[in-house]
Amino acid sequence: MIPVEQRLQKIIAGCGIASRRAAEQMMRDGRVSVNGRIITQPGVKADDARDEIRVDGGLISRDAVSRVYLILNKPKGYVVTLKDPQNRPIVTDLLRDVPERLFPVGRLDYDSEGLLLMTNDGEFSYRVQHPAFKTPKTYMVKVRGSITRGDLEAIRKGAMLEDGSFKPIWAAVEKSNKKSCWIELTILEGRNRIIRRFFDSIGHPVARLIRTSIGDLGLGELETGEYRYMQKKEVKSLLDLSGLRKKRSI
Image (tube, rainbow, N blue to C red; front, side, top):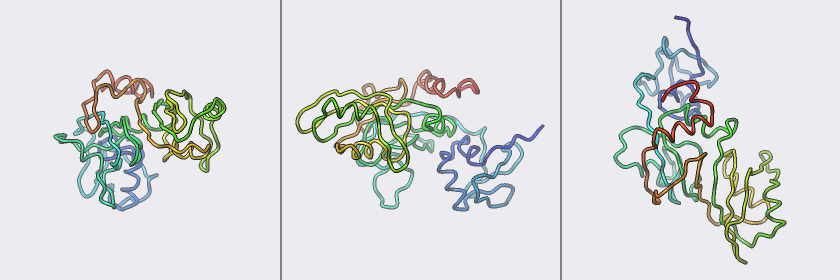
């Protein structure tokens, strides 16, 4: 058999251990070994069919993974991580009766709410959250102050932030009064607190932020704090958006 080498973080993600970003941190922390050698550089490659790859001493196996996909309606006041040094509530606390070790797909900050995907499928997570695959994410954003026609034009135009330009692909006013306004916003990326930083930059701080959909997948009747397993057709729909479904079956 011809060896097929891949970056270690991709192999770890594919085995359902963690997302690629988290896998890279595991490597930096000295928690990953290949054939008995500790690996700390994320660029190292291996062949999971031939090499002995361990995380925290445990042998990992792609064949042992049963892929799981959940939709969670995240409440405000939960951290989207697997461990918080400040001991705040984390989103996995909400996954009652889920035996698998799942990780969140992308970001949704502590004060934000709404649709959050949870999975143990690292490649699925990478494709859905990475801006290169252009998966649309829609939010309802309550901002302070009234929004004029000129403000809406500025929102649609976007802005240059400290870490690069930002421009939504859709923006529309849903409700408005003198003190606040609800705006529906669709974006293709997920940089840290990007929506909050954007509205701060145009003088309309965010009072509330709710993610309502990813691709064609919405919250439906899911109450705050509740979760459900995704249907196979829903997983396929998101895989189709990224082109991943053409490369594998689910």
